[in-house]
Length: 247
Image 1: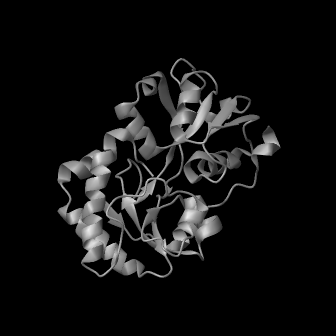
Image 2: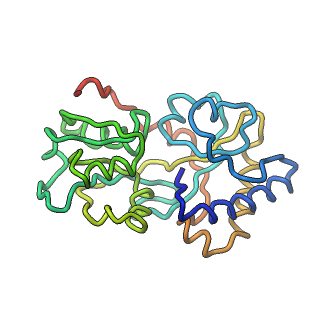
């Protein structure tokens, strides 16, 4: 879920070690990552060995279709291991003091079924019973952030891990600042088909992490893997609002 050109080789190295660890346990897997595999049909496949999904699709659509394997820990500041949050980002030269001050502004988000891009924002604002009057669906976190930087939108909710990589690699990120941060929720989980043993795959991931070059893991910002209970994902409320409510 966090792949980008600068990290491609690191992800491939990590995957090679996962592939070997799976093979050591008698589990067949592709030699190379399938980077075209994405979305509900892919995640629901009985042939799925391992993928990463988002918390909201998991609890809404995949709960009884896949097995939860574990959650990578990206060491997000202010979050328990395996958890993450979202940052509301705005342009640096905009001096409104809170997200509530952007109630009438244009909110950019990646997808309606995104935990970090949409649900986290909704849960953050529901306390004040407000929502953005105008929204812009962009299809990707980076596109949302760019929309704010290039004045196509005024504010966006960005996955904290994505934002960390944006600060490292994207020049436009220098035009933005973090306004507020949402409450931590369970991070993006690894899943597998219900045909597979998730505990065996979790063990393989632990083995792969143990043998992967520490520099590679630092580039990926992966510190380990956690077993977060299914109930923790289900405890996160789904938005009680649709995009069309404020278009």
